[in-house]
Image (cartoon, rainbow, N blue to C red; front, top):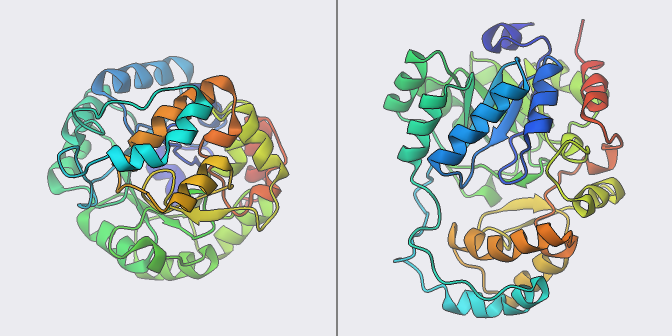
Length: 347
């Protein structure tokens, strides 16, 4: 029953969902200090920022920490592959609303994964979690040499089996209820929308490594259900994102607090990849244009006005990621959320 705790050095089998762009040192440390696994998303981070982030986390908590990277799925575009001009023109009203000019196309849309991995291995977090793919043998070997556990994410049984075969230490079975990006890599995400209740027990039956349930879990009842399905732990995002320790804007937290069960949708508008969030002006207007660039070009071009909107506290121009259990996210303190979740862990 305590496989995940032994594997990762935890007091409680609760994992903070890694928020790409919305992670905070305060929230990650709060979960690690509380005996769980605090996670920090490194999407878009340069090697220098990775060193700074892990250093700040080490200074903030003595508990184990995880960092998260996006693995290449193979369909990513570079600036040489796509003319972003028409997509920028389609989004121009949103740039104007945010008070920023249309940007120049960068030399690259995101840092090289090889450079990010070098920085992660130099910084030596306790856990490396990966989404959108399977870590290669060299990455797994380098992690093992440094005592770093590796966790993969799956949206189907086939993905979980592929991750176990590759040699990861644990797998997150991510149901369609989960907020943020659908991290599918073997099939189109729209064809991999298996719910948590259907996915978790099938993954548990198919693999021998610990399974962490994710999607639709926000209180003790969801935790108890996950363990009843055979999970060794749970990963929770939206309930923690709603807390004051997260990096979400006040408007984002208020949107989560006000959300009902039907108030999240799946969209590619904000990043070019399928993700679940609460609709706002940016999402609606981008979808209405029909002009959505492939990933990561779309993520870059919306990121420019999203950054300005975040600084201004404008919730209508940011990504309001949230899962279908947003209506259960009623607490605004990370410690209280952790205590509520811990109450659902079997004795």
